[in-house]
Image 1 (cartoon, helix red, strand yellow):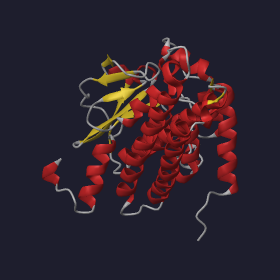
Image 2 (cartoon, rainbow, N blue to C red):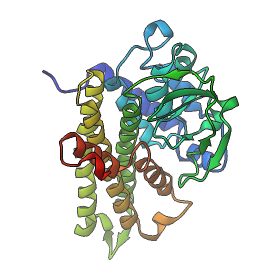
Image 3 (tube, rainbow, N blue to C red):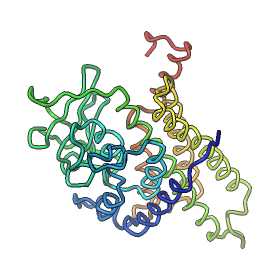
Length: 325
C-alpha cells in the first residue's frame, strides 16, 4: 500500500497555494479586520476550481471527492488565514444538503455550528447556517436565524450567536459532520503553524544583534526546531484522520480527535516561539504576525479544544470515564 498523495492531489494543492498567495495576501485579511464583510476574491476562484463542492456528488455539480482530496487545500487556506467559511461550507455543510448544487458552485454560502454553542462564523454573509447539538442538526436560513454579534479574538473571523431555531427548519443527520469540522480546522492550524514559522525564520535571518543574525543563536534555533517538529508530528495525524473519514473507519472520530489535539498544540507552540523570537515587534498591530497568531488562537478553541479532544480519545481507549468530563 502506498501511503502518499497522488500527483493529481498535489497538483490541486499547488494550484490552490498559488491562487491563495495571489488573492489572499495579508492586506485582504486586514480588510476583513477593518470590517469588510464581502466574500474574498479567492472564494470565487475556489468555487471555479471546484473546491467548494469537492465533497458534493458529481450529479449535483460537485467533484465527488473525499476528504483526503480536500485536506491539503484546507491546510493552504489556513496558511493565508482566509477570512471565509471554507471549512464550514465545503467540509461540513455541503454534504448535509439534499441539493448541494447551489453551494457547490458558490451561488449559495453556508456556515455551521455543531458544538451546541450556536456560535457560527461569518453567519451574517451566509445563506444557510447548519446548527446542531446533542439533540440533532437543523438548517436555518439567515433570514430566520436571529443573529447576535459575538466578540472574537480574531477580528477577521466574525462570530454570531444563532437565536431560537424555527420549528420548520429542515432536520438533517450526519454523524461525522462535527468530525469534518474539527479535522478541517486541524488542517488549517497546521497551515497557520507553517506560516508563523516561515515568518519567524525570515525575520530571524534578517534581524541582527552583536553583528550576526539572531537566527544563528542556539536559543532561537531550538525554539524554531521544536515548533517544526511539532508540526511535522501533527501533519500525518491530520492526513490519517482524513483517510479514516473517507474509509468510514470505526475509529475515525478517535483519529480526528488525535489530529485536532496535536494540531492545536503544534500551532500554539509555533505561535509562542514566533512571539518570543520576534520580540516587541511581534505584538505590533502593524506587523502581519498577529493576523495568523490570533487566527490560531481562535481555531485552537473551535470545534473542541485540545483538552476536549484528549478527553474524547481517553474515553475511546478506556482511560477517562464519561463521568469525568
